[in-house]
Image (cartoon, rainbow over all chains, first blue to last red; front, side):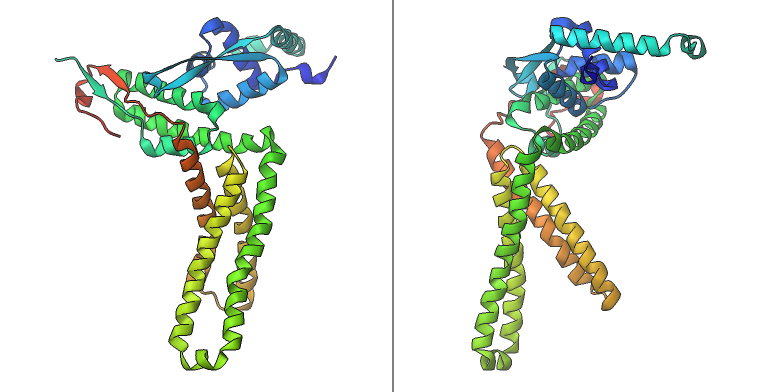
Length: 110
Length: 225
């Protein structure tokens, strides 16, 4: 098993946000989803830096939308998770689950 | 309550700041900021939206700066190293030229001290202009990473100047004016980078007015931020 196939903490969060948003996933919605669910204020720069990194690893793919006046004439960049990305997120989830199993963390957090 | 469309623009200075660091492939990032600014302005008012926009712009700029090296370390480092050597070569030229003239006409300068001082001050200004030129060259070479390259070069120069000033301060009495003048050098390098970047991005930025249909009574005015 290749150690690089695991996702980092923020990468993990971003990929999960993409999976939740499906075909509505672009910078604004991803940032809002993370803020809403993880209660964590993130900058759009951090989101894009992570998405670019994930794209270079082949875990996500992006495509351009049409420019709109609301966005100052700039286009949206939509993202979707690839099969390789889904495998990586599953592997990371499993590793986290195995590491936390039996620690009783869920109880202590509740 | 009348429903009118209001022209709302995000803070120009913040947008300019982000545009300095964003490459042409990342322009959707600025669009995202713009879109969310409109959304917040229509929901919570313009003042909170402006605060949010500034906060995001500063954080995003920091991120873009830090990730530039990671994304393309050699493409970013090469113009910086080149700029360092070009700077060293170019900045020595006015001094050498002045020395050649003063050595030849030593008698003239000793009897025209005012003119000599004027020439020296002119040379200091010329030094700054050359630094700006170096900034422009580095920015031109670092396509898409103009600000990262020039800021890094300026920081490196700051470190060198700081070390030199520290040495001078321990051996000679401190001249604050001279210290400030020394720090102007890295600053104009960054200014050179900003000039090249602004000129380059002027072609691809299409500023469109953003219409925001809002019924917020507190924000009921045409807005030009």
